Length: 80
Image (cartoon, rainbow, N blue to C red):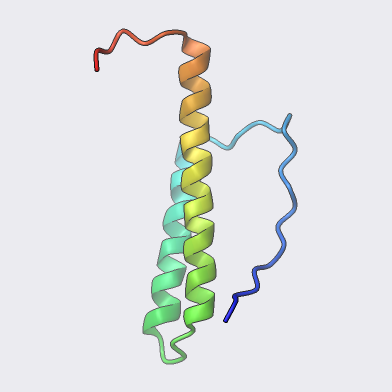
């Protein structure tokens, strides 16, 4: 069974990324909504998976944000 996700508007590449706290809050909100969908009386697994997918998307944007900041700051002095 394939889960249908709501189509989200594509983010414009020139649109500034949300702040780190906003991304973390959005990801946490989706995880909380997934838990509610699983543990309330309806046990809506499809909705829970959709929220978990959205949380993963937020974390990917967070990773992208970090990579962009790292590239902007130049080479790192950290050793491997």
